[in-house]
Length: 102
Picture 1 (tube, rainbow, N blue to C red):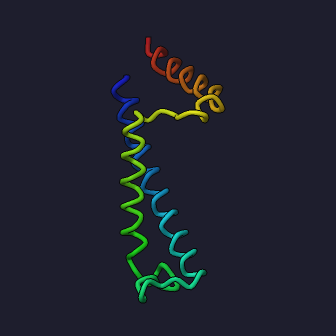
Picture 2 (picture 1 turned 180 degrees about the horizontal axis):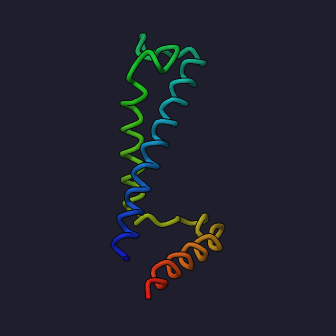
């Protein structure tokens, strides 16, 4: 069961990294467009006109996923203190789910 939780953490981190990377890329392109920065026409007015947002999102996603992997999918300081009650709740739910198969 521990292996299943670990695999699920990896899958969740990967999908979250992809979604977060896409959000970051689109916000960055929108910000640069509003500021009038076009980098010699590379940045379009709308993200639908190019694949640049997808390419940037993969770079952001890889960076985010590798960071999560490097910290072992754990919460870093000071957020670990702030989110401690939720960590206890998560461990309790894991324990309840894995021990109920008796």
